[in-house]
Length: 71
Image (cartoon, rainbow, N blue to C red; front, side, top):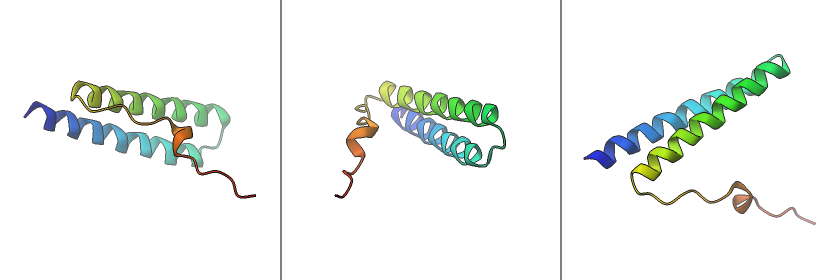
């Protein structure tokens, strides 16, 4: 049962990170945008930690997911 609780916490952290990301798009100042992006990174870090505690493998690097540009 412990794994289920971690998975729910990780998903909640990811939702909070997504909210920070959407707020950062609408931020009016650079300082606010920077703070929201740092908050997003912290929430994603907490989600990754919950996944680690649950024994899940780490996510692939973001650059590995990017599609190559068309020529």
